[in-house]
Amino acid sequence: MAKYVIKLNVNQYENIYREIKLLLSSFLTELYRYNKMIKNWNYYLKPIHIVVKKRSNGEIVKYIYYGRYWYRLARKPSGIKWIYIGREKPVRNLPDPPSNPVEGLVVKIAGDEVVVLTGSREIYELINSVLISS
Image (cartoon, rainbow, N blue to C red; front, side, top):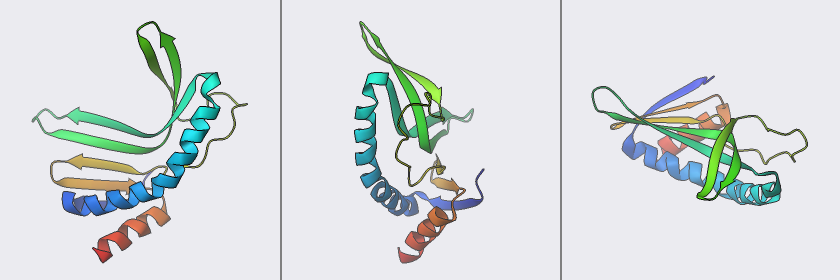
């Protein structure tokens, strides 16, 4: 559950997004290595889940969820099918994944308004410091 809520405009969010990408950059290298290591189990861990919804008034709302999203890969003659499993590690004997530095962060973009939700005081303070310096 989000303890911290920050409302931004799209221009402010661009600066925040750069910081999020910086935080994720070293993590993504570890994650790619991890996914390569668990490849034989036919599982894949994604750090981001994006949902786009269209409201009844036609407005498009984009939700970006940062965390751990597990998928099973099913090979088909036509390609690979991604089957969402959940947020918990699917098999106990899989190695533990690297920790996502922005786990639990949710970004909601609707028109020019951006709402950032987080349960982490550290992420909240990082976002505020970026806002103050920009």
